[in-house]
Each structure stands twice: as C-alpha cells, then as structure tokens.
Image (cartoon, rainbow, N blue to C red; front, side, top):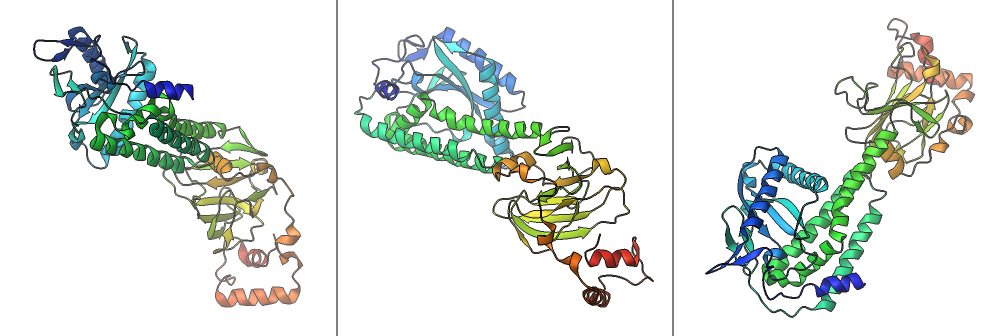
Length: 447
C-alpha cells in the first residue's frame, strides 16, 4: 500500500500555482503565453480529429494544474465545451459514447506532454458545466479565469479516504470478476452503473465540500492508482472479447465437433427475422447426420413446424424457442427426432433433436441456428457454459425419447381417426405435398 500512501500525501496544498504554467501579471495570474498557444494547438488538432460538425462554445483548462493541489500525478486537462442542446435526446448518449471513443483513440495515437505532465483532451457538455467556488477553470480561448482557484489550508482525513478508496477498489475488482461470464450488454450495463455512481459520488462531494472534499479526493486516488481506467477500459475489453468470438465462429472454423459452413457475416438474404431458414443473424453448423443437438438457451418452445421433405432447402423440423432469464430467442431448423412441443420449457443442455439428412446434398447436412440481431452464438456458448463435446452422434437414447416406434395397430388407427376428425391431416381430395400416406406415417412417428 506504499503507492496509496504516496498518492494520499500528494494532496497537500501548494504555496503557488505551478510556476511553469502560470505567470503573475500586475493584477492577477495568467497562463504563460507559450503554454496557452501550445495547448490551443493541441485542442484544435483534437477538434479536427473529431471530424464532426459541432458548435464549440469554449476550450478550458481545469483540474489540479489549474489549482493549488497540483503534484507529480497531475494531468493537463483540456475540456472542449460543446452545447449538447444541439443534439436530440436520442443523439445525446450516442455522441457521448462517440466523444469518449474518439478521446481514447486520439490519446492512444498521441503521447502528448507538457513539462512532463500528460495532456488529456475531453469533450464536455458546456450547458451543464458547473462553476464551483474555489475551483479553478481557465478559458484558453479568452485567456481569462472563468472561476479563480483559492488556496485553502484543509485538514485531510487520510485514514477515512484510504478506507473509502479500498471499498471502491473492492467494488471495481468485483465487477471485473463478475462480468467475465456475462453477455456483452449485461456487462456494459453493470459498468455504466458503476461509472455513473462514481460520477455522482464525486459531483456531490464537489458541490458540498469543493476540491478537497472526501469524495473528490477518493475519486482522484482511484484515477491516479489506475482503478478508474480499469473500470472504464473494461467495456472495451468486453467488446473485444465479443468481436474475437465472432471472428472465431466464421466459415471453416470449428465449434466443438461442428464445422461452420455459413455464419452471420456472410448472410445476404435481406432483413429476415427468426423462424425463417434464411435468418440473417445465423450459423450453419455442419456435422454428421444424426448428431444430437442440445439447447444453447433457456426458454419456452413457441413454435414447431414440419417442413416439406421434398423441398431442397426448407427441410426438417423447425423449432422456435422464446428466451427467458436473460436468454435470447433462438431458432433451429433441419432437424429430426424432435419431441418437444409448443409450451414446453427448455433448459440449457436439453435435447432438441438430431441433424436430419439434406436430400439434395447429404454431405452438407447441418443444423441452422438463428439468433436476434446483435446476439452471438459463440458468446452464448461461453455465457451458458455449454459443453460442445456433448454434441456427438448417437449420444442421445432414442428409446428414452418416445415410444412412437413401438405403437401397435390399434394405437395407429386411434391416432389416424383422431387426426382426421380434428383436421390435422387431410383426405386424398385435399392432398398435401407429400400425400396422405406421408401425413399418416409422419403423424404416428415413423420416418
């Protein structure tokens, strides 16, 4: 904890503003002209990098180097003030995310320093910027103080701040661990809640106690010891993980015993929804005929459809499952031996059916798995801890699935009579594509 101790000791009040950046004039203290010119050049370059048609109201410098609590841990914080009222309510969160990503890209591309201090660019909503008494904010555009810093001797409770910092570090470490097995959207929501809570925590401290409030000093420690960056960069790592999963599930790659022969990156059927063999966001998983398919999700069966065996593309049984407990909807097709029915509850790993034979191309027999837009099959496998080795030919015991293959003549006659009475099958005067005999055999469970 020596680093934490050093950081806490850095919060002592300095006798003057940093002399390399600020120069005394007759009546006040102004920024050194060369420093101001250089910082404006950096700000203009960053604005050009944004490549957006936006209205900038001011460019300001704030933070510890604009105050009396500067130290070796300080950064030069340049804030580009943009009036967010020029954006619609729908656009605001999108621009906020874009500005953050642009900032990260710019800072990664440039290693900018001023007298050894890192220079950081930010885009801030100028319409909500609050001027807090005693905290310095300097306008680079107008070369004047918007809010003058005050030098106050304060009694800092280092023990209390250290305790609060450790609590936040524990929270952040917990989030890092707990989001490893979550899907991308759930993880991002958890991270956002943490960032929002941190921001409100600091803001309340600044409002009530100013620059040396316990909340603001805790926030600064978390920034200086790397924990603030740890939680902020976690979202990027999660997105990278998702993209890596998608990359690993492209054509020709392996998923357990399956070979991906078509994935969501090469679909070109148009915006087809689930319950359609041409689902855009889908994976065709090739495996031997008869390979058992188990559920990737938890849900309730919403639709079962038998496809015409004479159709060269739409073949086999189609199964649609409505996701529950955070699982997405999912669609399977090109199956046989399906025993679940509409309304049945399905858990992760439950038997769905077997890969059926593709009459026109037996060597390409596969299961088609469709998911809603934005969802990823590889991500599901990771999140739900699915053992793909379980998906092996002949691992499911057909004798336990059903006794349809053992029905006697009386049972067949009873089922046929019932099906005719209820209209489930039609008389030869109104034949389906595969004829009355095909209907009867399918209805009683024979292939």
